[in-house]
Image (tube, rainbow, N blue to C red):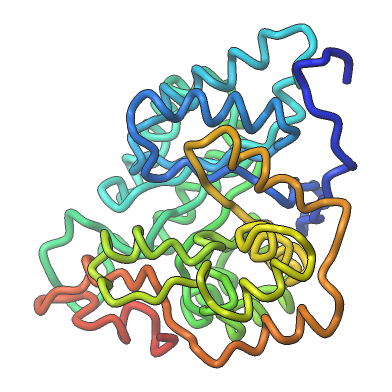
Length: 323
């Protein structure tokens, strides 16, 4: 790419979806960035070589994501829109089939786009539901409304997020259009092995969120005693061995784990540093040690979605025992 404002990096690894499409392995997460920071972060990421931006309706920052995107798209030296994989997500307050299309259309308008590369169902929850033993409307009906978005060209792919093995299997049993992605929490403290193995066996790509452990997010989500993965002695030891940061080691671990990965930062310097994971790798022994850390804890447990009247009375019910 011409232009000194763009960093030259090794070719980014691409993962192949069941449809044959290619998704860039390292993406920028945009959750919890304060107003005024998102556009700067998105622009910095694209200038550093990222070609994958993850956003969501729940983050309430689509317009700022758009500002960063289009500043770069309008640069004659910048990437084309077709080169950048952009994902958004349908949130729990729109888990109703009649709301799916207009919500997606609004998201596209906010982002200034004609289509998304992927649109995910954010949680298997309807926040408007007052109770009951089953999700209402059924997830199947919401998924079928998502499939129509592909038919109409509003998104190229559809997928899910925060689904257990059981819930993912249910969707696969009736999906007319393939489930391209299940975006879930994964890092050495929560390897989520059962879901990962099952998804891979079914051709569903896994995208890892919270790859750095994000204890600040855990506190926000009512898990105040969450340990700090970035300070784990083994992570720190490996980082020193490679002369890398703990964050770079964890992002590299995710790549070698076979997932795409969504580190997030508001700092342009850290955004650039987090992308410096392409031209080196962890040894087999170091990868194995990080993949064997005994502590296993889900940071984002979804406690806010549990309530006595259902449909999920406990965290165990939300995750079908995978906690």
